[in-house]
Image (cartoon, rainbow, N blue to C red; front, side, top):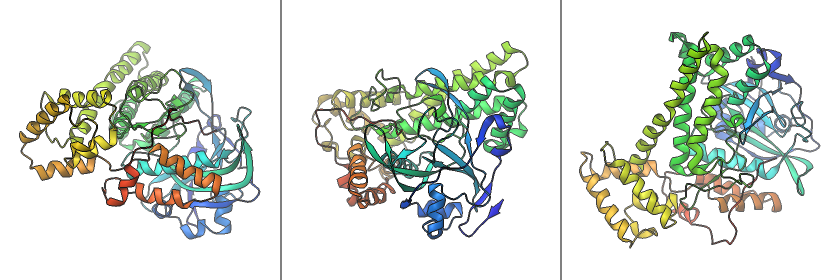
Length: 487
């Protein structure tokens, strides 16, 4: 490990894995990088000097023009099922600089996204546009503030160069921070093209990095499967509770650490509808809001398939072990989801009628096209008149049942209110607000809209007056909102 004045404190454990797993190369320099934004709080947590990152040398590093001391840049290889179709992939426009060892002793991947062509670029230019990189910065930091496990964004720099997509766009590089970039697709790649020894090396590395308590387990690799399932069950519940739609839940976009990764055509749901899809390429609704738990289970089944040679020497027994674990995902998800929904309604204990109470509310919200976030916000502050449900016979009956339910628990009304405040965000990164910030930044070079937006999003459970304008719904539009992969 090497420490310098900026605070870079790199280790490079991934680079010690078999060469099959990656390609060593440096980032492609850019002409005239300029800093757009740096995440001061994240920098401090990583042990980095935010002022040094804003210096000439710091910006050169964030742009990929300068490799910091101690880094061993590489592009990771992986595969994945993209919309159900298996293909060879890899870091086509990103490089892992190395692993920053923070003052806490935690290890974090530092990755440059948009840093140039790699062996996995598949005829792409290896670059990224400013808009999608700022989108990832905004959404990932909003997710972090919401308490959802996520990769994070350290900085965005412009490159001084244009990239060509449908039009000419300003180029940018995002510095992404992750617990790791180990994916279901990483295991799929090694399972397909590696040896049994390679697969075991990857599994052992994953256990050491994310699940070191495995040493006490009789079957380490079964434990790995169990823990990944557990983390994903918790993560997808968190998405569902705030109305987040990932948009492209391919197996290469499922991180084994349990973090949300790859913010391409993602968005937050306004009107509650399980069939909501924002991605322009998801024409069949494979990754719709309501399908996310089922897709997670499907992806985990693909992960389990890669582990079969490690789970048991007898293939039939290995399959049986894997199937037993995967079959338990649904129950884990439901248990976690009902607990989260109870909290959103101020309920502390369990009763048999709770599922129907919760599902009846959601059915009404879908029927009357109620806003997901603002409905729970109105219930939190006992202002049902602020929702489109108010005045309907169904809601009046439901509200009476809900109040009776709250009255049957030991906790006082004030405790229920506080539970709801901490479980229902006042604001989310509304799609029209995200677009407003991106348009000001990309088209006008005005970053103040984004900076104010980020400041408000940093405390989503504050329920402060200044958040009210950001909770407002967008004006009606004849066209549905669409997002696009950040290519």
